[in-house]
Image 1 (tube, protein in one colour):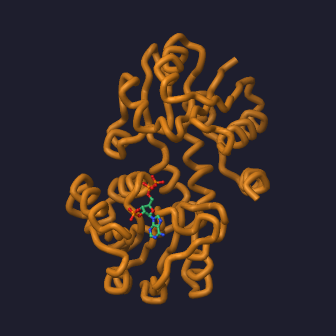
Image 2 (image 1 turned 135 degrees about the vertical axis):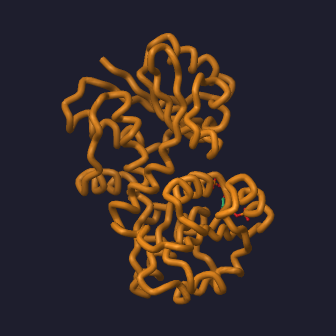
Image 3 (image 1 turned 180 degrees about the vertical axis):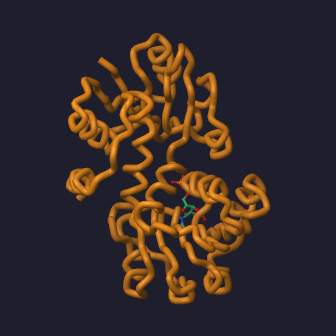
Length: 274
Ligand code: ATR
């Protein structure tokens, strides 16, 4: 039986077991997916268990996403760029580190706002933490020409822009009003929105008409930002799809079936997040 895992510390909040077990059942695969609490001190020993062949691979979450890189054999270039691994695949005795968050972000936009990229010249990304790195990698991978990276602490945006290259233009949240009229995509990667918190003084109505607004926060599913964007008749894409889509490439690598992200899966996961 093929075994996979998600490791983190703590791990109780992870939705990954629900997603992967749903797919295992749906595709009648005799596999398992376990949530395991692994402390940073125990990480090397756990990686040893993967090397010994106990698992086909698994997911990695906080606090191991950066730390685990040093324990693996190969890191995919974009995972390297993002500086974090969320998926491990054991293959031919080697451990490969991948980052599927950027794929999940892109697949969610592709599904929720088809054509979002057509003619897109400027995107605005809010927040410059870990989650912003995957979003930047995704947007750059798709060739978005200009990305305004706006953060409460502009220094952090500047640092990230230096790492990600010339298409990323750093700024402060107060720059939003000036940049918004040329922007057809707005992505919130900050923790604003969690538990219903909101940005103060962001003039969303200045965005280009027809703009797409997406949030990586999915609890609540409709964040105050998305609510306001809907009221202004912009297209919106919620963050739950990113969580579901990032899981698919890992499942495919471990269990050999590319799973589908369906409305039924969304409902199952939503029921567990409520
Ligand atoms: P993660 O790794 O999950 O992205 P993080 O590194 O703590 O988490 O980043 C959180 C992001 O949310 C940061 O961009 C943070 O802005 P700062 O760099 O200024 O801290 C942003 N953020 C958190 N609370 C915020 C708030 N009340 N207003 C604006 N931005 C906020």
